[in-house]
Amino acid sequence: MEYKIDFVFKKEYTRLIAILVKKFGSQHIDLIEDAVQEAFFKAVKLWPIKKPGNPSGWIMLVARNHLLDQLKKTSKKLGNEVSEADANQMATDEMPGESEIVDSQLRMIFACCHPEIRQVDQLILSLKFLCGFGNEQISRALLKKTDAVAKALTRAKQKFREKVSDFSVPGIEALKPRLANVLKVVYLQFNEGYKVSHGDQLINKDLCWDAIKLAELITTHKHFNTPETNALLALMYFQASRFHTRLDNNNRLLTLEQQPRSQWNHKLILQGNIYLGRASVGNKLSTYHLEAAIAGYHATAKSFRETNWEAIVDLYDLLLADSRNPVYLLNRIIAFSQIHSPAEALKMVKTNEKHLPDNHITKVFVGGLYEKLNHPELARHAYHRALEQTQNQLEKQFITNKLESL
Image 1 (cartoon, rainbow, N blue to C red):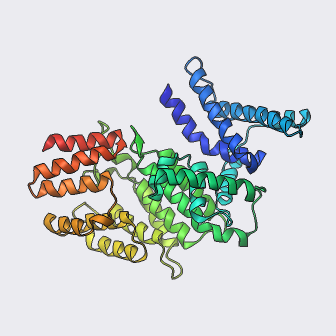
Image 2 (cartoon, one colour):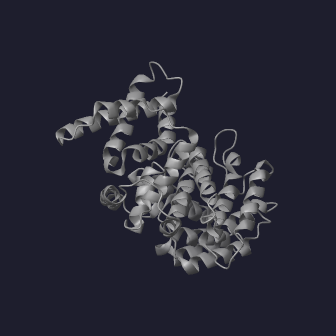
């Protein structure tokens, strides 16, 4: 039961925050967060006894009622009491429909990307309120220290209260500069869903599909139906096509090489190709274009061996020319290792060691190279270090299996 409550809460958190901020105002963001948390705590206490017929509606109602109680108490302390009529009206308002929920989420993501909030703080706010990320998830997504994220979040929330007093959608010219960060948030949300960093899930499909839904909603506006937005959608659809093959029937992680390609969702691959075609207009090549092209090569290759690894290496070179992103560098070396010897790949790892991500993915890759070079002790050491660096149970089991096979 705890897992199911946790699942509902994660699914509804961002929707609740967006709806309640739209309804009650950004100045109450702390009270709104508290109200949503309170609803969750009550669910943990009461649902094991009697689960509601409509869990989402229950969470919304409890959060809203708790918020109203807190607003009344706060306004009394300030000598500005909420009238009973206003409170009754707010308490009896109908539950929001799906269109209102989506509209609230879209408004929220553009509000978090307000130009008077620092760019990095925009991302932190959006990942917190739109994706429901904790500080550790945000720190991993942005490659920052957790304590730095906590301080930045406090600062960002203060700016949010000050600058986003009106939750109405500003004019197009005011919104255009925000689009780049909005797309970055959607991208980071999908990435976290595609490879969950905590717990016993590998994929949070709801998080991924919510990201896709937001991006598609953005494209419905002619001013935001840009090549970059379409390229991002292409990337997400290519990746989504492999959802059902990343685990086997025994819930064990499958590498890209092990996945049965016949079971990939070819309708989603086709959708990815459609969006990639729409992204090809104009002369600007964004990181989303390049990443989508890489994902497209993987999605359309007949087999792992027949993948166009040379083209993928070239695309990572283009990405690295624009950004020294450690993840791009690691992925470039992984692709390089498919067309060169393990010794050459290991040499490249050692040459770039200081610039690679210090995470379990790097350690697993290095361990695999040592295995191929018949150095089991060095492989074992790399795998043990990888085990220490992941908090996902399925990945831990995957690494444990590698250790046991040595």
